[in-house]
Length: 168
Image 1: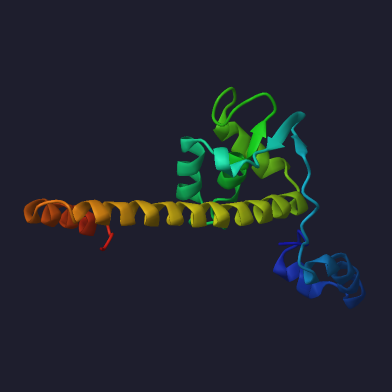
Image 2 (image 1 turned 180 degrees about the horizontal axis):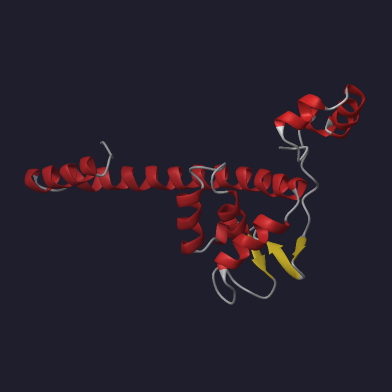
């Protein structure tokens, strides 16, 4: 497949010719390395900025990251479309995100993609840590408030929290 030849053609090929093809395929022995993260990327003639300010992430971006971040290998275009924003646009406004995903899939180099995914991974882990810490604070506050409620109300809240996967 890589050579553009059938199995029968490869089998009948002179060994000297096979050697030439093997030299051309040497790059497959090495893992690709990420390029240096750039301030902006130009794809299909358009400039895209990297969204870096995860402290001010929009609700839409956060929800999309939650949705697509669970399977990084399957959702690379989707994840990159969340952090690569067209110049002079905000997330999801002023451009077609599905078109951007196609542009990313067809136009970004492997090195640039790896650099962006590496950047995303670090930011995403930090974002998840902050989200979990915030949830923990809310849960502690809720627990303290529950102590002041009557028994029937406490039982109802516990039931709701248990159904959501939270335990006290």
